[in-house]
Image 1 (tube, rainbow, N blue to C red):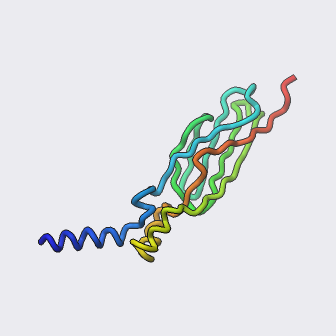
Image 2: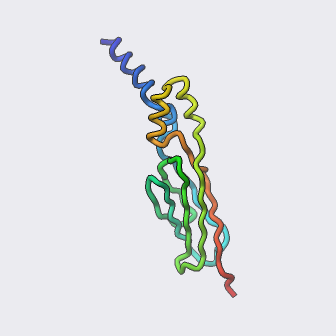
Image 3: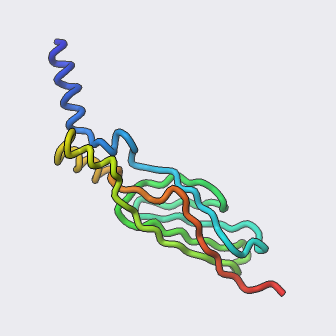
Length: 133
């Protein structure tokens, strides 16, 4: 019985992806804007293939990791100040552990959960606005 439990635990290690276990399939991203401070609160929409969120910058948002870019579109309440930033994801170094532990199955798990990718932890969106005179 003990051998079966130990075998199951070892098998679980090989089935689960390393980055999935260590980093997870989502992450916190801090969003800030720069410029157009006189236009008041700036609302931003954060979008990737796995979903979208709306926030008032500066703020943090939880996003699902994905191989595709994260698009952040921001504007002031009156729509006069606007900005957009597209941020590419990068390869999560933690995924390299799959070569030793999880092999091709672990890489597959990390790819399916998005854990093999990451976005920058802090993103600054430059704003464009007409001058107030």
